[in-house]
Length: 579
Image 1 (cartoon, rainbow, N blue to C red):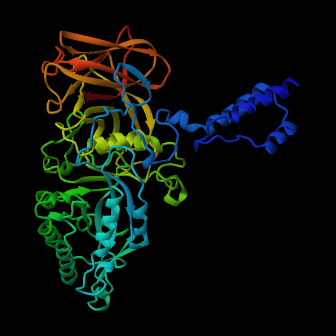
Image 2 (image 1 turned 90 degrees about the vertical axis):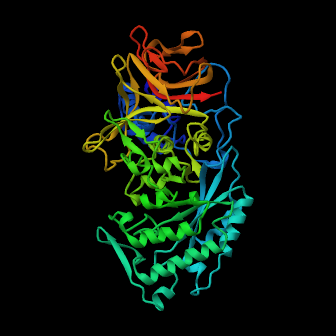
Image 3 (image 1 turned 120 degrees about the vertical axis):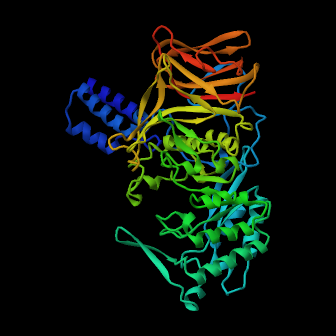
C-alpha cells in the first residue's frame, strides 16, 4: 500500500515536468504505468531515483541553457517590448526595456519576411502588422527570366506592384535580382547564344548550374539589364530600402560578390558589374549592398550583407568590416572603417531557428534538439549589433519576444544617436593565433588592469562545432567575475558632469551577501548595493543615477562593480541608458 501511494505521487510530479519541446507531457503513459506496476518490484527509493534520472534527461534545457527560456516560437507581429520602469528595481532575467519615447532610426531596418519567387507575391498582401516601433522590411527576389523573357523587352511592373503592396502593409522592400543560375536567367541565353555554364560540385554532389559570368556576352546582357532597371525608376523609389548585388553560387545563385577564392577587387568584370550599379544609384548608393566584402564596392559607398550570423563567432577578425582583435583578445570595432564611417547598408540574416535545423535533414547543424536555440538567438542578435548592423533580418517568428522590439530601436544607430550602450562580458576560443575572444561591446568597454583582473565564468556549451573554434573548446563563458570589474563609456556616446542615466546590470545571483556599483556622482564617489540570495538565476538590477562622465574615478574607470566581504560580482551584461 505504501509503495502504491508513493509510486503515484512520483508519477504526479513527473507528469508535470517541462520536457525539451517546452510542452507539458506525460513522461509515462497509462499503459507503461500499468506494466511498470505489475512487472517491476522495486523499492520506492530506487524507483524514485530511476524516474528522477529519466526526468532530468527529458528536461535537459533547464540544466544546459538555463537563462534563456524554452523553445517557443512567437510570431514577430505579436512581440511586445519590455516595460520601462522609472525606479530602481531588480528583475528576474534579462532586461530589454528602453524609455517609451525612444523612436527607431530611419537608417535601421528589420527584415521580417521574404518572398522568393513570383508565385509567392500574393503573400505580400498578408504581411503581418508589427505592434512595436519598427522599420519592417520584406526581402523580395525577382528572377531575370520573368523580367526579360524576350530579349530586349523588359517588364518591371511586377516589381513595382509588389513594392506598392508591401508599402500598404507598412513594409519597405529590399530587391534582389536573381540572374546567375540557369534556372533564373532567360532561356534565350542558352538557346540563342549558347552561353556556357558551370555546374559546381560539393563532396561529389552536383549543385546548381550557373552561367559563366565572365563570358563577354553574358556580361553585356547583365549590364544592359541593370541599366534598364535604373531607367524603370525602381531603385530611386523611397519605398525601396535596399538593392542586393550578388555573383554566382552553388546554392540559390547571386551570392557572394566575385569568383570563389579570388580577391574580387582584382577581377575586371566584377568591377564593371559594380560600376553598372553605381551608374543607376547616383545619390543613393547607400541602398546597394553586396553579397560579400569588396573594397572597390565599399569605395563607392556600397554596403554588404552576409548571412551566417547564427554562427556568432564568424568574421573574427575581419578588418574589411571593422572587426579587430586587440593584443589582449578583446573584440574591437574599428570606427574608421569605411563601411562604418559612411553608414552604408550593413546586413546580416539571423534565421536558422526552425525545428528542422535540429534534425538529420539538416545534418543536425545545431545539435539534436532545439534546446540551444534561444541562447543562439540571443547571442547572434547581440553580435549583429556589435558588428554595427543596420539591416537585421529574422525569420517570421522570435524566440525572445522582448528582444526584437529592442533590436528594432538599436539598429542603424551611431554613438551619438543610440538610446543606450552596452557590454556583453563573454569569452570564446578561436583556432590558431586568434585565441581567446573577449566581450561583445557597443560603446561600453570592460578592460582588465592591475587590481581589476577578471576571470571568464558561467560555462555554456556550444550547440555545434563551429569550424573556426579551437578543437576541444566548443563552449562559451557568458560572464566575468573579479574583486573589481571596471567599465568605461565611449565619450562619443556620453559625456558631461551631470548625466542622468539608468545603469542596468545583468548578473548571476550566486552566493549570499552583497556587492557594489560604484561611480562618480554629482558630489563625488557614490555607490549602490546589489544583494545576492544565491538563487542561481540571472537577475538584472537597474539603478537611476546622476553621474559625472567627464571625470573618471581614480582607477581610470567611469564605473565599477566591487566585491564586498569576499562576495565577488558575476556580471554578464551591462547597459547604460540615456534618460
